[in-house]
Every structure is written in C-alpha cells, then in structure tokens.
Amino acid sequence: MSVIASPTERLEVLFGELAELAGQRNAIDGRIVEIVAEMDRDELCGATGARSVAALVAWKLGSSSANAHAIAAVAHRLGEFPRCVRGLREGRLSLDQVGVIAAGAGQGSDEHYAALASVATVSQLRTAVRLEPRPEPDPVSAPARSIVKTSGEGFTKWKITLGHDEAAVFDAALRSHLDALVTDWKHDHEDDDGDDHAASDRRAPMPGPIDAFMALVEAGWDVEASRRPHGQHTTVVVHVDIEKRTGALHLGPLLTDADRRYLSCDATCEVWFERAGQVIGSGRVTRTVSRRLRRVLEHRDRSCVVPGCGATRGLHAHHLRHWEDGGPTDLANLVLLCPYHHRLHHRGLITIAGPADRLVVSDSADRELTAGSIAREPHGPPPDVPPCPGPTGERADWWWYEPFQPQPPPPN
Image 1 (tube, rainbow, N blue to C red):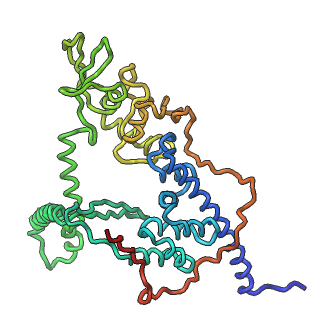
Image 2 (image 1 turned 135 degrees about the vertical axis):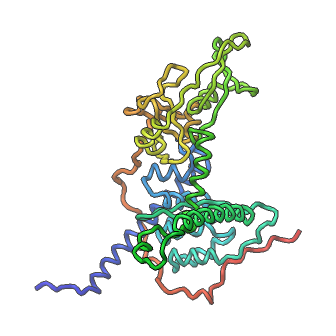
Image 3 (image 1 turned 45 degrees about the vertical axis):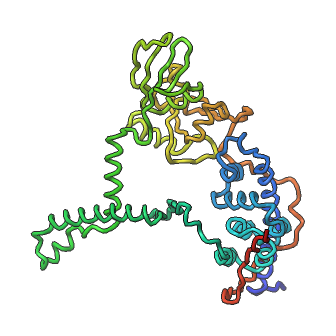
C-alpha cells in the first residue's frame, strides 16, 4: 500500500533538491567570475572585438545584460572581496548577492557583507549598501548627468538626471512649449459651449507636460533635420591625391588609410582631387545613404551587425566594398555598424566581408564571430559543494542594523 506524502513532506524534498542545485549553480558562477577576472586583468577582451567585459560575457554566455554586468562587477573587484567570492565559489552565496555588494559597497567592507549576505536577501543587501555613509560630494565637481531608459509591456520610461542649472534650462523650455500649446488649445476652443457635455467629451484634452515634451523633441528634430538632413552624420571635406592615394582633411592633417576610409564611409563627404599638390577638380558628394535607403537598412539589420554587440543607437551605414574601390551605395553593399566596431574594422582589428546576406565577421586572429553563446553539454561532474539553503527570509529591522563604516585614513 503506497503512502501519499503530505504537501509539507513534498516541499521538503523539493526544497532539498533546489538547495543542492543552487549550491552547484553558485559554485559554477564563482568559477565563471574567476575566468572573467583573468580576462579582465590581462586585457584579453580587445582581441574579440567586444566593447566591454560585460558585453563579452553577455555575448559568449548568452546571458542578459544585467547578469553580465553582475559577473563583470564581481570580476573587476575580485581582490577587494575575497570572503564574498569564496562564499560564491563554495556555493553559499549567489551571484546576485555578491553582485550587489561588488557594484556599490565601499572598500574594506568584505568581512561585513560576507557575514550579512549569509542571511540577507538581494533586496536587503541592496538596502544595506545604500545605508553606507558616503563622502560629501565635491562642490567643485560637475553634477551627475544621466539618461536611463527602461521598457516594459506597452510603455517606455525615461529617467533624466541634470544639475540644477541645466534643469532650469530644461524647465524653461518645457514651460515655453506648454504655454504655447495651451494658448493654441484655448484659441481652438474659445467658441465651445461649456454646458455642452457631449462636445466637451469629444474635444481634445488640454495639453499637459508630456505634450510639451514631445513638442520640444519635435522642434529640435525639425531644426536638426533642416541643418543636417542625414541626422547624426557629418560633412567631411577631404583632399585626395589621385597618384599617391592619400587624403587630408581640409585645412587639417594627413589621414591614415584607415581614418580616411572611416571618415568617408558614412558621411556626406566633399572630395577635392589633386595631382602634384594642385587641385584639378572637385568630386561629387559621395556615398550618401538616402533617408529612404537608411530606413530600409535599419529595418533589415536593426542593430550593429557584429555578433555580440546589439547596439542600436548612432549606427553608421558601412560600405562592405569601399566606395574608393568602386563599391556601390545599395542595400547589398551596406550594413549597420556602431562607431566602435566601425573604427575597429577600418583599423584592421576585425574583418567584415559581404555581401550583406552572407556576412562573415572575423576577429584579429581570423576566427569567425558568431552570435550564439559558447555553452555546451557538460562532460565533468557538477561541483562538489554542500546544498545552499539561501537567505533566511527574515524581515529586516533596519532600526537595529549598523551599516558598514569606512575606516578613516591614517594620520600623517
């Protein structure tokens, strides 16, 4: 006769298996951190074409950006938190716990947070790090400025941080556009009968700050579009010697072959041809990617085409076969590149060969770069570490918590 286990007994069995798997996963993450720390210390990431250690980790492990940044943060401060990292390697602490500590904890706090992390959740550790006393900001230094974008289902949120002086300029511009929109709205509805509720429900609502912000963006876009029809690109004046095949900026220095090709690859470039130092004629405005062609290119590539990059802002339209070599400005000969990888390509550190539908990207060692992660089926046994029960889940009473106190510098 079989005995049906109670829900409590089943949970105990499942929790035991979860604890064992969590300990093994933490130990694996600890070894990953050590490997990434070695690559960071010896500056091995540059040979891969990745723009940062976190970008390389996200690409090669197929992980999220947040997870990759946590690994990179712990790897970068490996020497500062030996106890915390040892807890990670032994399976007692998770990567998320140690990542929060490495991202914001002060120097010398390893022992403090190693003890706290054994019982605290990630959220509690984040609060503890925030409670650390921070040095007073330097009044002479420039205020922090940032723009953070977060996207959710059905919305996108922007968080803009400005100093008081720049914030005052932004506020003045926003108020100016809001006043103009409200004035126009009142002018359009001055004949409306306030007692006509049906008409009131149908008419557009009075403009608010969001409408003013979009008007501000559109006004700036219109000015920018009229000044520079191709958005972020610049006009470059280059003097080319047709015999020596060299180039120089107008009233500027000579260009290397790589710089000449980079500057002229995705810019509105006015070319003057010379022979023996004498101007013999001007070339047409070359390689201009039309607005319509760029829209098609953005729809096709969506981001930088170098595997593992994923950048979507400020992209350049790169000619796979350069215009100097007779490369046409058409869709099959164009791909999108971020400025970082665009420079890397023209300096010979990565190779990008087309056509666009059969693109091959290689690193400096002629190894082909692929977008997939390097994960494979494990052949060795899992790490031999004890199960990790995780934090206690106890509610934190921050009234009695003593934050980490940095030690004062020794007297001279």
